[in-house]
Image (cartoon, rainbow, N blue to C red):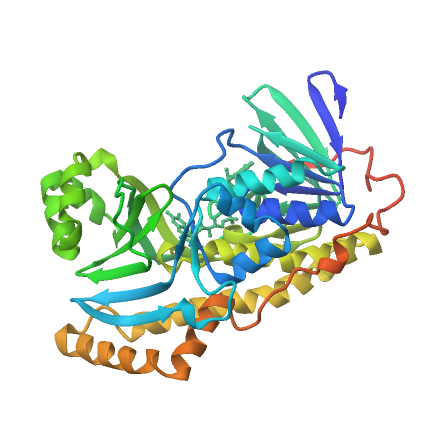
Length: 435
Ligand SMILES: Cc1cc2nc3c(=O)[nH]c(=O)nc-3n(C[C@H](O)[C@H](O)[C@H](O)COP(=O)(O)OP(=O)(O)OC[C@H]3O[C@@H](n4cnc5c(N)ncnc54)[C@H](O)[C@@H]3O)c2cc1C
């Protein structure tokens, strides 16, 4: 880093905004390919406990290919063998992951903190890595319509200007990088739900599955997680949590215990105040564009799925895997324009669109509505389908998606040959800042 008064400057190949699992996984792949990476993360804590934990087999396989799965699990995680959706005591959906091929014939409840720590430990020892923890990206640098880096600030006083050939926004569903680039988030306002999370201790009470209980106007997701806790997420229509909270914690406990009577004692002991839950707004979104000249969006910044879909973290890792060779090609060619980066969006956007379509299909079909008779019919159909080969195929599709993604391991060794001479592609000159 060079110092210009109180402003530090840094030249790199790729600037990754957000040390999310996807941002870290992309950094790891690029560094192993010999590409320099600067990673900016505005939080100093490794992570908030309530975000995406459940990893699908596709995500586990990616982490294994990157050599970080075992280390992450050793930090603490839980193996779960299925995913069920229940309504009025009946199973509407039942995916048994034990029907898949080993070793990824399971779901993993892996606290994001453990995954991030393991990934960070792997990237930190690689040459070409610049880590800026506690720095928030406060503006994007744009020249002639092309993103050329960003400015990051720590504690409002330390400023660093990062010059990069490409900026990758891995800064989540509320991505400011996306907003600064003028890209519409494509948020579906009708999808906005209140979501509250609660992780009570529950030693000796493993669920061994992810269960979603549909009840009234809400749904409750429950699974066990490290260390001897239950992770309980409750989604409600917008405003639904405030209504409940205003009626008091005893009423909340009664409603929850009505849905999961087997957990009444856990709720009684540990849900003693409405402050015991962590509120998080849930919504779905599909950004209008995922690439611009010198810029790409991955993970929730590009496409956000409801927390109960338990697929967001895996999809974000897949984005990183698909973007990695596209970036290598673009850097080798010295052309990081939108047309070259578009290969990434062409491969990944249809996946996000298909998920959005299946979500609205389920909503149109009234999953969760339609009264007892409709619920019984769905339960019977699910029971029959889940025992057939079709049920196995459906589980595989959720586990790996319709077009499985593999890490291009052959690109992970040796220095990246295509680095532009002199490293920084555009030293000098004044870039316009979009804040
Ligand atoms: C409550 C909840 C529960 C969920 N449960 C699951 C689940 O069980 N399974 C699953 O697959 N998915 C789940 N999801 C979705 C999942 O968390 C995300 O899809 C997943 O984390 C991928 O997100 P990401 O990689 O895009 O970024 P994120 O994980 O959102 O991380 C973004 C990072 O960018 C950083 N950042 C933001 N702005 C800046 C800035 N200006 N400068 C620097 N850094 C910045 C943030 O601090 C953060 O570290 C859940 C989501 C929520 C909200």
